[in-house]
Length: 238
Image (tube, rainbow, N blue to C red; front, side, top):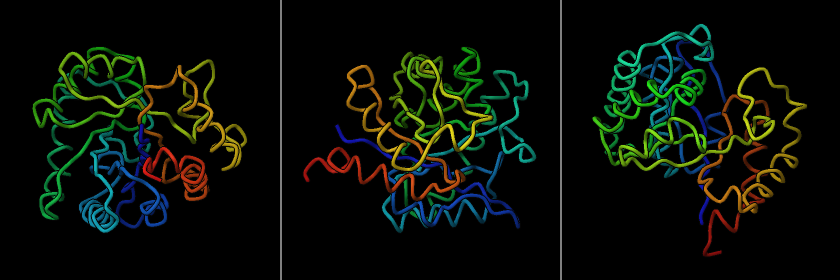
């Protein structure tokens, strides 16, 4: 099985710059581009889509809460209708820039707090996946294994790809999305070894994509180490 490598990017806005997007894009196969809510703006969306096209990288919508001040990492109470609406809105926004480049959207991934909120709340995950289905049921959804988002996608017949976060620590099989330290994730070599060992474990045979965030310190070195370690499954013909 070929393994996808994805990265959250396009999260700069205005005069603020986040992430090593230009260094990361040649190393990945899927880019999750922010759609203007937790990060990103029209110019950044346009430039990031163009960068993905230049490197032949698949593009997905990275949908977040309306929370630039907290970078979409603060938990904000949302109703299912609000999640449906903000998901559909952000899908449409990114789609406009893809159409301008004669590209098509490949997948969708929630961001930050909304990712975890939907994973834990069936009503919110249903609202999100229903928005994706209404927009384009052929899209894939990146999500944690065994969570509500995965189950909601399955009920609608939406392809869901289980994700492993290489640059986040795990405890008892659960990802620590916030409040982690660089010491907890280790060096690029440590991370690459951990990813390789996980993918060799039959219990994790359903992992289809591995994420490194563009704004993690040393993200390009981390992704390069993973690529070097996983080259046979990234390019099976080699």
